[in-house]
Amino acid sequence: MDALHSLFAGFETALTPLNLLWALIGVTLGTLVGVLPGIGPALTVALLLPVTAKLPPVSAFIMFAGIYYGGMFGGSTTSILLNTPGESSSIITALEGNKMARRGRAAAALATAAIGSFVAGTIGTALLTFAAPAIAEIAVQIPPSAKFALIMLAFVTISATFGGSPLRGLTSLFLGLAVGLIGTDLQSGQARFTLGFPELLDGIDFITVVIGLFAIGETLYVASRLRRDKASVIKLEGGASMSREDWRRSWKPWLRGTALGFPFGAIPAGGAEIPTFLSYTLEKRLTRRPEEFGKGAIEGVAGPEAANNAAAAGVLVPLLTLGLPTSATAAILLAAFQQYGLQPGPLLFVTNGDLVWGLIASLYIGNVMLLALNLPLAPVWARLLLIPRPFLYAGILVFSTVGVYSLNNSVFDLFLLALFGVIGYGMRRFDFPVTPAIIGVILGPVAEAQFRTALQQSNGDFSIFARQPLTAGILLIVAMALILPPVLRMRAARRAALRMRQEPV
Image (cartoon, rainbow, N blue to C red; front, side, top):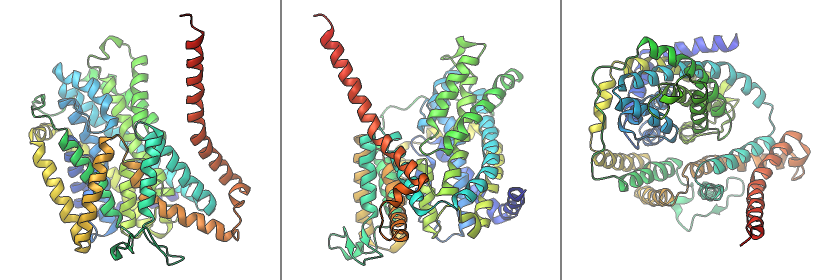
């Protein structure tokens, strides 16, 4: 009942005319960037961090939440009409949705994606409403040593999940940790990694790092890969609509996709990719029309799209209750919290309850707005695919430069932006994931603070990390996650070599 009371108070905050306007701006922007290939919600929120620095925190996060959910909605349009998934979680939608569009069923594919996103987003937000306060009450009792261990677990799982190999993920993470250490140590007063530049004594503004690595690097990479020939965009006549048969075949996949997506979004590095693939596999096994899969089965669009949006709601659970991001967009949202001097975690529900519950209430409102925007206006969003992409990426570069310069009116920040932009491009070019680096920059100082606090409470006794059962258990999982995969790969390689030796020539 406390959660419901707090939610009603959140609706009072979210339903003010100004916040409704920001919610509408957010969902519209989110749908727009979801439709445009190569531009996702994480990049958009990163670009808007400098612009929204002087907005009230509640209004800013209501807009960010609208962009986040809107990006999930809009991504299906690109996948279905252009066969170009803007996010990795939309690959399955492109697989079946584009086949439906080529068979003349683009309207049904877009409708089942939009309604499935609405159903999953609403159910996921309801689960967030009741799960987040309960987890926050437990998280208040977690000691600093266990918080440090949890951050280590997030580091390892995110590094192992994002990118082509765990080693590359860890390399990206260590780059972010090193950048996060630049500046003056608050306890000793010693300068660290400043290279003699007085501008670095206060550290590097994380907004500069985020926009450089993510926005500039991503834009340069995508722009360098643009094809000269125009992609084939399937025309859409009329709005998105479904027949009675489409409804009958879609409602169960929506619910099953939601059940798969939310838990995966809530666990560290669960993400939306795994539940979308699981949802597709499940629907393929349960369908009465297996012959349609691979040729445009509506279940193959409904289930994965629901899983994708339910995972987006699940991602907010560890972010708000523990301060742990489990996706690229969540990492940028964590940076946005720090921009306002806020630290997501269990105390956020106590110290900034109006912000948290206003944000959660806005998710319900945003879902309704998105459904109203996506069903009747589907042809409008489809026409955005015809915009020449070089114009888009040139605009992003200009917007990024102006935004970073406006933070401190510093030319030095522009040099840093260019440096991190080149580094970000190189990381994408050689398949080093950017997300672990961003999370390292943001969570690195937090991990250091928790580590030092734990040692201060134990008078410098390192055994505190082994004496506390919760901390020891989490660190054991971290050690196993680091040690077991290479050991198992070595054993598999030895067995393969032994089999080759035993085979007769």
